[in-house]
Length: 399
Image 1 (tube, rainbow, N blue to C red):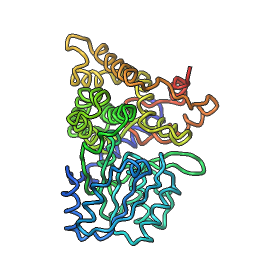
Image 2: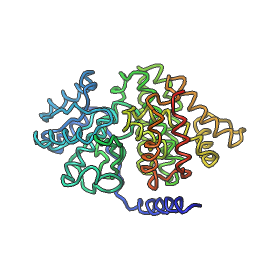
Image 3: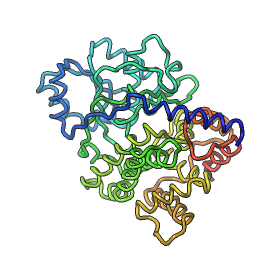
């Protein structure tokens, strides 16, 4: 074992040991708008900042929620300027709206970007004297946010259950995470009706995003009995329902199962962490604004193959749990069948095998940023060196 690997593993050991005393929590779950709004009324909430994006507003998805808020006499202000891969200035603008309109609570409505933006607003409100660069990493917020509600409209990020807010620096285009248990929303609405209008390609990439969360949590070295159970159930639900939701967009049962899977995967990875797939995807998102779900979908099989035999035992377990491999297959066959199933699923749903935006001249920057994000924090199955990371990123080049 190299000194660098020893350093990373020592850091992860200490972090895992200390995680048992952290204030982990999960959001209170609602399944209907009225029940969530009644909760807001009971808390004497008077004005809520709704963080969303232009597409959500255009589709009219939040109209039932707004009607319920009006009926309960709860005022609201909508910040709909969230951008994909929200930037620091984007978050600062939303936080200013919160302060100028004297809001007393936050509601994120949408996919991963509104969720990240809303979490960033919360962090900014309780840490006004710190820059986002100073909040980067783990346990830098450490203060309770205003009442925070999350309404996911995709089945992928699981952000309604996670400690992470991913932000992009406007100037350097570096994408990084602020991680703190205080960023977990207090309440979440899981309503599959909100996902019925998702286009097939978004259904596919967000679903594979959720699968990435489950897999990286399961194969890492900081999982617990509970995170393994959540990751396994999430993987099973995705294996059984993603392609149905992709082909039959109005299938409410498949949509509900995918939404539950996304939540479970979020529960799993917020405690067990992610790995090199996310580190590379964040670098790609920061540099090229590649959608996070799409990046994870493309990167996932490449990273799993690079890990090699060290991940075969756990991939074999997932493969059997999802009904992909047979019990009579040997362990290597079971694991490789799981990776092949991921690749085949991507192909069936029109997800590319490469990142078309990737430029060869940017590979060194992406490698540097990915390694900086992942090591020593992420408890990956095997520590990549620079050459191994370069090999993975190079494989993402369009042919």
